[in-house]
Image 1 (tube, rainbow, N blue to C red):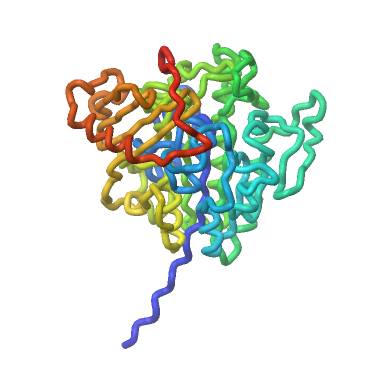
Image 2: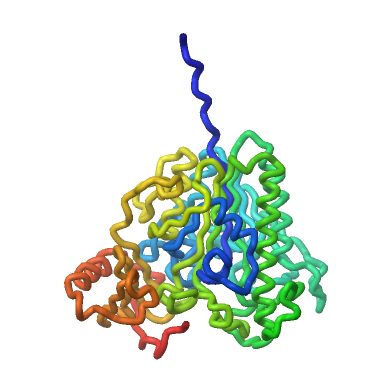
Length: 443
């Protein structure tokens, strides 16, 4: 008897949620004891928690560039927070997903092209875009204007001294509206929800009291903490609750089992706006914060959930980085992974299977001079200038990178030196400029 033809499963919906400057240790399932994140903790219990996930960079724009182009900062267009725009020829994962029939949306912070730039969201594959005018504009939580596609929207509740329309709340409302509309359609959807929480409201850190504005400091009002820390914790708990609303909506719309949700952060924790990362031990056991290439600056929390596909309640120490997200999502969408990417698909790891690791992961950073880092197996090499000696750490034995063991392992140093020499191409926008190493790393 002839068998009925197999029913082809629809490609999954994808929701990629990105926090801004959220440290490895800022949520409960990664060790946080005082900030409440019950919905993210539940997401981890129902999915996969990655303990060796890495951001694309130690600051915002290059990290997001790696996320969307599949290139590490040795090859990516953007390698620092200076010139932050993609060019027309820079292929993004959104453009590929759109070509695969996905309805695409971006809500929040973009950083890779402003209005009039070739890297503007609507020109890089997004059907719907709602958010800030620029990366600098995204430093305020009560903006007077936002963009919806190519049209400016006035937020009259924030005119003058009024502060009634909190951007993360508006982003959550837009995200719920997008998912509610898209979940009932035949085509799958891709939503990138890029919160600005818990970024400080000023990059320079001049405000020492209210650099973490929130509508309320609840549920931490009665804690004997500095007000800025109450607000910091309240912002994260508020974001957690909003993510819970999104997860509940997926269930209500019958899309829960058809949707991969991936949550992570764009880099390590900040020390701006009066916030002190040590107050909540935001980097956990790792050394360094935002703008450092030590683990605290680039190792980030990451959770993936897809009921029926991703094993529940599992942790993985498989090392991957932001440039792996593009090939991963393209494979899930049934597309062909473009040639020339630095990333590799981690679909096997997502689904609980073994896979070959990267030979190495590479970062470079240009704001403090020319800094480079490599992770190779359990080894981490860092160089603070093109002519400086390499520092070497064994992450399995010394995850806090406290003891430089370069003198004991010259063969490993030599191998990492080769990676540092060959992993990059020259960039006119980000030339090699050596500066004195900072006297002390943060964290």
